Length: 249
Image 1 (tube, rainbow, N blue to C red):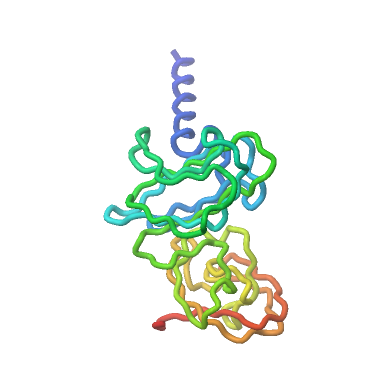
Image 2 (cartoon, helix red, strand yellow):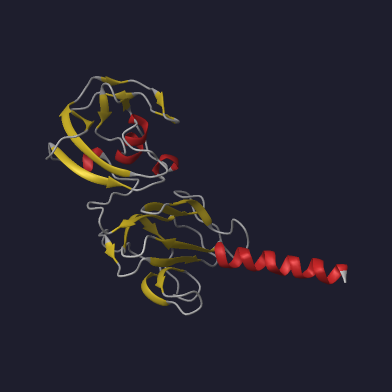
Protein backbone atom coordinates (compact mmCIF):
# COMPACT_ATOMS: atom_id res chain seq x y z
CA UNK A 1 0.00 0.00 0.00
CA UNK A 2 2.75 2.54 0.80
CA UNK A 3 4.36 1.63 -2.54
CA UNK A 4 1.08 2.32 -4.38
CA UNK A 5 0.77 5.69 -2.62
CA UNK A 6 4.30 6.65 -3.67
CA UNK A 7 3.65 5.56 -7.28
CA UNK A 8 0.43 7.61 -7.38
CA UNK A 9 2.33 10.65 -6.10
CA UNK A 10 4.98 10.31 -8.81
CA UNK A 11 2.38 9.97 -11.56
CA UNK A 12 0.58 13.09 -10.29
CA UNK A 13 3.83 15.07 -10.19
CA UNK A 14 4.68 14.09 -13.79
CA UNK A 15 1.20 15.05 -14.91
CA UNK A 16 1.53 18.50 -13.33
CA UNK A 17 4.79 19.12 -15.19
CA UNK A 18 3.23 18.01 -18.47
CA UNK A 19 0.19 20.26 -18.14
CA UNK A 20 1.86 23.34 -16.79
CA UNK A 21 5.33 23.51 -18.25
CA UNK A 22 6.81 20.66 -20.23
CA UNK A 23 7.19 16.97 -20.80
CA UNK A 24 10.03 17.20 -18.30
CA UNK A 25 10.97 20.13 -16.04
CA UNK A 26 13.08 22.78 -17.85
CA UNK A 27 12.70 20.95 -21.18
CA UNK A 28 12.75 23.93 -23.52
CA UNK A 29 11.12 26.57 -21.31
CA UNK A 30 13.20 29.73 -21.15
CA UNK A 31 12.69 33.04 -19.35
CA UNK A 32 9.06 34.00 -18.91
CA UNK A 33 6.91 36.44 -16.97
CA UNK A 34 3.14 35.90 -17.21
CA UNK A 35 1.50 39.10 -16.03
CA UNK A 36 -2.21 39.87 -15.91
CA UNK A 37 -1.97 42.51 -18.63
CA UNK A 38 1.35 41.74 -20.33
CA UNK A 39 4.34 39.44 -20.31
CA UNK A 40 7.26 37.79 -22.08
CA UNK A 41 8.03 34.21 -23.17
CA UNK A 42 11.21 32.73 -24.63
CA UNK A 43 12.76 29.40 -25.53
CA UNK A 44 15.51 28.02 -23.32
CA UNK A 45 19.01 29.48 -23.90
CA UNK A 46 17.65 32.37 -26.00
CA UNK A 47 19.38 33.96 -27.94
CA UNK A 48 21.57 30.85 -27.99
CA UNK A 49 20.48 27.61 -29.66
CA UNK A 50 17.40 26.03 -28.10
CA UNK A 51 17.80 22.43 -26.81
CA UNK A 52 17.09 19.28 -28.81
CA UNK A 53 13.75 17.61 -28.07
CA UNK A 54 12.20 20.71 -26.50
CA UNK A 55 8.58 20.46 -25.43
CA UNK A 56 7.09 23.31 -23.47
CA UNK A 57 3.75 25.05 -22.92
CA UNK A 58 2.72 28.37 -21.43
CA UNK A 59 -0.87 29.31 -20.61
CA UNK A 60 -1.64 33.03 -21.01
CA UNK A 61 -4.72 34.42 -19.27
CA UNK A 62 -5.87 38.03 -19.18
CA UNK A 63 -8.99 39.50 -17.55
CA UNK A 64 -12.31 38.47 -19.11
CA UNK A 65 -13.53 41.12 -21.51
CA UNK A 66 -10.05 41.67 -22.95
CA UNK A 67 -8.27 39.92 -25.82
CA UNK A 68 -4.58 39.07 -26.24
CA UNK A 69 -2.15 40.70 -28.66
CA UNK A 70 1.13 38.88 -29.41
CA UNK A 71 4.33 40.30 -30.89
CA UNK A 72 7.55 38.45 -31.73
CA UNK A 73 10.91 40.09 -31.12
CA UNK A 74 12.67 37.11 -32.69
CA UNK A 75 11.71 33.77 -34.21
CA UNK A 76 14.25 31.37 -35.69
CA UNK A 77 13.88 27.58 -35.96
CA UNK A 78 15.21 24.94 -38.33
CA UNK A 79 12.57 24.08 -40.92
CA UNK A 80 11.41 20.48 -40.61
CA UNK A 81 7.75 19.55 -40.28
CA UNK A 82 4.78 20.71 -38.25
CA UNK A 83 4.54 17.46 -36.28
CA UNK A 84 7.93 17.48 -34.55
CA UNK A 85 9.15 21.09 -34.83
CA UNK A 86 6.81 24.01 -34.29
CA UNK A 87 5.63 26.97 -32.29
CA UNK A 88 1.84 27.08 -32.05
CA UNK A 89 -0.67 29.45 -30.53
CA UNK A 90 -3.87 27.63 -29.54
CA UNK A 91 -7.17 28.78 -28.17
CA UNK A 92 -9.89 26.81 -26.43
CA UNK A 93 -10.07 24.67 -23.32
CA UNK A 94 -7.22 22.29 -22.52
CA UNK A 95 -7.44 19.12 -24.61
CA UNK A 96 -9.86 20.69 -27.09
CA UNK A 97 -7.72 23.52 -28.46
CA UNK A 98 -7.71 24.74 -32.02
CA UNK A 99 -4.64 26.21 -33.74
CA UNK A 100 -4.89 29.98 -34.07
CA UNK A 101 -1.37 30.52 -35.46
CA UNK A 102 1.65 28.34 -36.17
CA UNK A 103 5.26 28.50 -37.36
CA UNK A 104 7.26 25.45 -38.39
CA UNK A 105 10.68 26.91 -39.13
CA UNK A 106 12.27 28.79 -42.01
CA UNK A 107 11.90 32.49 -42.68
CA UNK A 108 10.50 34.55 -39.82
CA UNK A 109 6.99 35.83 -40.57
CA UNK A 110 6.46 39.56 -40.95
CA UNK A 111 7.07 41.02 -37.46
CA UNK A 112 3.58 42.48 -37.04
CA UNK A 113 1.34 42.18 -33.96
CA UNK A 114 -0.96 39.15 -33.91
CA UNK A 115 -4.42 40.20 -32.72
CA UNK A 116 -6.47 37.35 -31.27
CA UNK A 117 -10.11 37.16 -30.19
CA UNK A 118 -9.43 35.31 -26.96
CA UNK A 119 -8.61 36.13 -23.32
CA UNK A 120 -6.89 32.76 -22.87
CA UNK A 121 -4.24 31.15 -25.09
CA UNK A 122 -1.75 28.30 -24.98
CA UNK A 123 1.69 28.77 -26.53
CA UNK A 124 3.25 25.40 -27.37
CA UNK A 125 6.88 24.94 -28.43
CA UNK A 126 8.32 21.66 -29.65
CA UNK A 127 11.51 20.59 -31.43
CA UNK A 128 13.32 17.41 -32.48
CA UNK A 129 17.05 17.02 -33.15
CA UNK A 130 18.53 20.09 -34.79
CA UNK A 131 21.82 21.94 -35.36
CA UNK A 132 20.94 25.62 -35.20
CA UNK A 133 18.17 28.06 -34.31
CA UNK A 134 17.76 30.78 -31.69
CA UNK A 135 14.19 29.79 -30.87
CA UNK A 136 11.90 32.68 -30.04
CA UNK A 137 11.23 35.74 -27.93
CA UNK A 138 7.58 36.78 -27.63
CA UNK A 139 5.75 39.59 -25.83
CA UNK A 140 2.02 39.95 -25.24
CA UNK A 141 -0.46 42.43 -23.83
CA UNK A 142 -4.17 43.08 -23.64
CA UNK A 143 -5.65 44.82 -26.69
CA UNK A 144 -6.18 48.14 -24.89
CA UNK A 145 -2.43 48.72 -24.61
CA UNK A 146 -1.50 50.28 -27.93
CA UNK A 147 1.93 50.17 -29.59
CA UNK A 148 3.22 47.02 -27.87
CA UNK A 149 7.01 46.72 -27.89
CA UNK A 150 9.23 43.66 -27.71
CA UNK A 151 12.20 43.47 -25.35
CA UNK A 152 14.55 43.88 -28.33
CA UNK A 153 13.17 47.18 -29.64
CA UNK A 154 15.77 49.96 -29.47
CA UNK A 155 15.59 53.71 -29.51
CA UNK A 156 17.19 53.68 -32.96
CA UNK A 157 14.20 51.76 -34.34
CA UNK A 158 11.95 54.84 -34.01
CA UNK A 159 13.47 57.89 -35.75
CA UNK A 160 10.90 60.43 -34.57
CA UNK A 161 11.33 63.21 -32.01
CA UNK A 162 8.71 61.95 -29.52
CA UNK A 163 6.57 58.82 -29.28
CA UNK A 164 4.56 56.70 -26.86
CA UNK A 165 4.83 52.88 -26.63
CA UNK A 166 3.90 50.07 -24.27
CA UNK A 167 6.50 47.83 -22.57
CA UNK A 168 5.51 44.30 -21.53
CA UNK A 169 6.38 42.89 -18.12
CA UNK A 170 9.58 40.85 -17.94
CA UNK A 171 12.13 42.61 -20.19
CA UNK A 172 14.74 43.28 -17.49
CA UNK A 173 16.22 39.76 -17.71
CA UNK A 174 16.27 39.61 -21.53
CA UNK A 175 19.58 40.09 -23.37
CA UNK A 176 20.03 43.67 -24.57
CA UNK A 177 22.43 46.55 -23.96
CA UNK A 178 21.66 49.69 -21.97
CA UNK A 179 24.08 52.65 -22.01
CA UNK A 180 23.50 55.77 -19.94
CA UNK A 181 21.19 56.71 -17.10
CA UNK A 182 18.03 58.65 -16.25
CA UNK A 183 19.83 61.95 -15.60
CA UNK A 184 21.81 62.17 -18.86
CA UNK A 185 19.75 60.00 -21.16
CA UNK A 186 20.34 56.70 -22.94
CA UNK A 187 22.39 56.02 -26.06
CA UNK A 188 20.06 55.57 -29.06
CA UNK A 189 21.11 51.92 -29.46
CA UNK A 190 19.86 50.98 -25.95
CA UNK A 191 16.86 48.67 -25.71
CA UNK A 192 13.84 50.71 -24.69
CA UNK A 193 12.01 48.59 -22.12
CA UNK A 194 15.09 47.48 -20.19
CA UNK A 195 16.20 51.13 -20.15
CA UNK A 196 12.76 52.12 -18.82
CA UNK A 197 13.18 49.70 -15.89
CA UNK A 198 16.71 51.02 -15.30
CA UNK A 199 15.32 54.57 -15.27
CA UNK A 200 12.54 53.64 -12.84
CA UNK A 201 9.84 54.70 -15.31
CA UNK A 202 8.16 51.27 -15.13
CA UNK A 203 8.37 48.25 -12.82
CA UNK A 204 9.56 45.10 -14.55
CA UNK A 205 6.91 42.84 -13.00
CA UNK A 206 4.10 44.98 -14.44
CA UNK A 207 5.42 46.72 -17.56
CA UNK A 208 3.62 49.87 -18.65
CA UNK A 209 3.44 52.81 -21.07
CA UNK A 210 6.49 54.92 -21.84
CA UNK A 211 6.87 58.30 -23.52
CA UNK A 212 10.22 58.71 -25.27
CA UNK A 213 11.89 61.88 -26.54
CA UNK A 214 14.91 62.00 -28.83
CA UNK A 215 17.68 64.51 -28.12
CA UNK A 216 21.19 65.35 -29.25
CA UNK A 217 23.68 62.66 -28.26
CA UNK A 218 26.69 62.73 -25.92
CA UNK A 219 30.38 61.95 -26.36
CA UNK A 220 30.22 59.33 -23.60
CA UNK A 221 27.57 57.44 -21.63
CA UNK A 222 28.41 56.30 -18.09
CA UNK A 223 27.96 52.81 -16.68
CA UNK A 224 25.45 53.09 -13.84
CA UNK A 225 23.67 50.43 -11.79
CA UNK A 226 20.02 51.20 -11.03
CA UNK A 227 16.93 49.13 -10.22
CA UNK A 228 18.84 45.86 -10.53
CA UNK A 229 20.23 46.60 -14.02
CA UNK A 230 23.82 47.50 -14.86
CA UNK A 231 24.17 49.88 -17.79
CA UNK A 232 27.36 49.85 -19.86
CA UNK A 233 29.82 52.51 -20.95
CA UNK A 234 28.71 53.91 -24.28
CA UNK A 235 30.66 55.77 -26.94
CA UNK A 236 29.84 58.93 -28.90
CA UNK A 237 26.45 58.96 -30.63
CA UNK A 238 24.53 61.57 -32.61
CA UNK A 239 21.30 61.01 -30.69
CA UNK A 240 20.04 59.76 -27.34
CA UNK A 241 16.61 59.24 -25.81
CA UNK A 242 15.07 60.24 -22.51
CA UNK A 243 11.83 59.29 -20.82
CA UNK A 244 9.13 61.92 -20.36
CA UNK A 245 6.22 61.74 -17.91
CA UNK A 246 2.87 63.55 -17.88
CA UNK A 247 3.35 64.91 -21.38
CA UNK A 248 0.91 64.58 -24.26
CA UNK A 249 2.28 63.96 -27.72
